[in-house]
Every structure is written in structure tokens, then in C-alpha cells.
Image 1 (tube, helix red, strand yellow):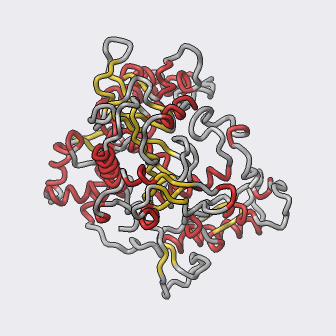
Image 2 (cartoon, rainbow, N blue to C red; image 1 turned 180 degrees about the vertical axis):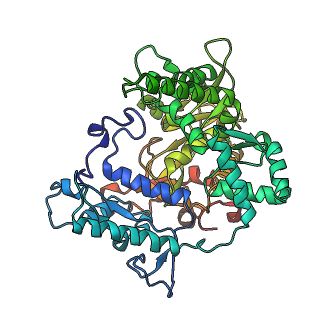
Image 3 (cartoon, rainbow, N blue to C red; image 1 turned 135 degrees about the vertical axis):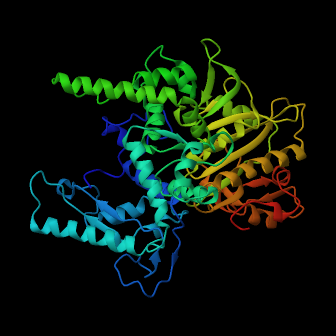
Length: 525
């Protein structure tokens, strides 16, 4: 509560990871609040509300419905509260609500009944402060007991296997082979089908990482935090991420060699800012450091394969590094290179399709964009060496002379097909083929989450530049199809009066439409 929600966090939290130049460069505290709600909404179970007459707890929302994905808000450091607004009567909860997009449905996730303001004094809590903490505890217990899975029965022998995995982890193991673990399962009377169910269950609750596909089907990561840290060390390594001069300039574009990844892991330091006056402690720290980086090097292939599966990174086929023809990887979230205005203008001047927009009501488009970029890279070749940007990626279609760009805004994924040669006309079949494949990828990515992601497919009504914010220009496909009819040009149904009134070239939209509405992938179907 001591932070002003309209302030840019990077200006004040300088001790944290520096987002300068990234997609999060100018984010305020309020935008990060919005971001975390989107994150929870993305990766957790369905948060739609439903009527529950038996629920008499205080976890209901303002409509007296029980939320299946309840979020408890704790506003901390009330004792350091400052005046943040010209309207002192406005509550902090109201300010948090104002941070949320009007077009999205995130407000249903929070409730004043699950909101608490707590103080963080340096000394002991007063009786009043302790009572607030007790209310928080009570809310947590009541919320958990009202979740759908509370009381669900799970075979006891599953937990025997979980206990064995915990012991292996406690003994320093990071990865085990399913072929070896199968013997342990058999000893506990668990056959192959049951073993797959156990692994799926432990994966779902976050105890392990396991995918029964291709190269991953025999690899079980039992130390999830170890795996997460492996990726964290790569993207936050100060040697390259601080963007110092002459240090691996490729990283500015999200590219990194396999050799450099190994160098990052090898140079991991455990709490390097904490002085070790005690020689014994220093030796123990060095031993831990050596053990950690060695575990990453020993399991490099498995780690990178899992990162690829999760859409965090991918190998760029046909590309080699600067040294010894080392493999090259692309990590979209590391890219801090801006798409220049000249590049945006170049697309606008070419023959191009309408800008297709996938507007996400509840999902986090930035991280969806990262995964989509990785997915498309496995299907299409890039235009050239400079095809990757922090908010856009360029690809070359199979049809000669056709290219397309995938970009991201705060609320949408953008797709636009274009040519680089004025003598090459856009081929309608090529446009439709690209759209269909991209939407298949979108569908595939959404199915990796707990629930279907809610989004609408549509078009930009204005001739905006790629990566521009598009919320004010979004026209839902089902609506624009009714307006078009057989006309080559119509007045924009969204901006039909005043100075913003303009026409829409419907030929560019018609080129993108499928003949059968049933083939469309959107939240309407």
C-alpha cells in the first residue's frame, strides 16, 4: 500500500530485475497488479462463478456467488501508507479495481470479502493487528475447504510413490528415468496405466514435471525449483542481461548459443553479495555452487528439451553460433530489440492483408505471444537474420514472395500477411492457409492449459501499424461479416461519426475469411 499504483516500478525497485528495454519497461505498479491477475487466470482452473446456496462463508463475491478460482488480496504495509490520490476518500481496493481493463473480465476474480489491509511494523503486532492476521488465516482455510477438489479421494499408494520421489530429491537427485522408476512402481503394485496417472497427477499439482511425449517420455524432473532456476539464471544473468558493451550482443535479440548457456550455469554464484567470513561456510557455499552447475551441465539436454516443450525457447535450425558451430537457441522473453518505425512503415507500404487480431479477454497475450513465436519457428523459416523483436517476429511463407508478421499488443495477438515486391499480388489461398495454421497453433497452445482460453477473432478497422495498441480498433469477425455483405468499402461500424469516422477496405478482410463459418476458431464456437 506504500506504492503509488501509477508509478513505474523500475524507478523505485532498483534492487530487482531490471526490465529496461523489455516489454515491461514502463509498467506501473497498477499494471503489474493487472498482470498477476491475468497470470493467475491463465494458469489456474476456471474462475467462472456459479451459484452455491450451501456456501455460507465470506468468500462469496458481490453477487453472492461462490468463485471457483478465488483470489485473496493482501494489501500490506498499511503503516507506510501515503496519500496517493486527490480523492483521499477513495479506498485502496477501489484503486486496484481501476487498474483492471474494462474489456476484460478480471474483476470477477476479486472481492472485498477476500480483501485485507495489514500492517508490517518492525516490532510485535498489536492486538488489533493480530486480529487482522487471524481473519486472513480464517479466510484461507474457508476458501480452501470450498474448492472443488477438497475431499477428493486419491489412492494411498500414490503418496507412497510421492514420498519416494521426495526422498530422491532430498538426496540431491534432480532427474530420474521413468524406466527406472517403473520398477519402484511395480513393487507398490502400480502397473503402467496407474503409473501414468500418478505422474500426471503429480505434474498437475506441481510436484514434478513430466510429459509423456517424444523424447521427454522417459525423463521425470523431480526438482521443479531447480528447473525453474535453470531458466531464471539464463534470462537474468547479469553478465549479459545488464547489456554491458561488447558482451554477447546476440542476446539483445533473444539469441543465445548452447556454449554460452553452459558458461552462465558454470558461473552461478550462490548469494554472491553475502560475505563469507566463516571459512567453513565459504567452503560449503563453494561445494553447493559446484554441485549446482554440475547438475545443470549433466542434464543440459533434458532441461533444454523441457524448455522447448513449455514454449520458453527453441533451437534455431540451420543457424550456428560464433564459436565451433555451436547450436543456437532463441528465447523470446529475453529479446529487448525494438521494431523500428521504418520497418513498420515498410509493411504499410506493401501489398498486405487486413490485420487479424486475436483479442484476449482474460489471458496474458505477452506470454502467449512468446510461445506462438516458438511454435511458428518450427513450421516456417524466418525472413532474415533480423526477424526477431521483443514484440514481433517475421516469417517467410511457403508461397513465393509472401511473408507474415506475428506481433503482440497489451490485449491482442496480431497477424498480417504482406509481400516485399509490389509486382507480387497477395494470394488469397496463401493468406487463408497462414491464418488456418496460426489458429491451429493457437488452439494447440490453449489446450495445454487447464481450461479453454477465452478470446475473440477479429480485424483492425483502421490502417494501424503492426505492434500498435489496437483495443480501440478491434472489430469482431462475426460482426464485421454481417456489415460487409457484397460491398468493397463500408463505413466503419465502430467509428461512424465525428472526426474518427472512416471507411474500411473490405477486400482485405474478405481475403482472410474462410468460406465456412464453422471452421473459425473463436470464443463464439
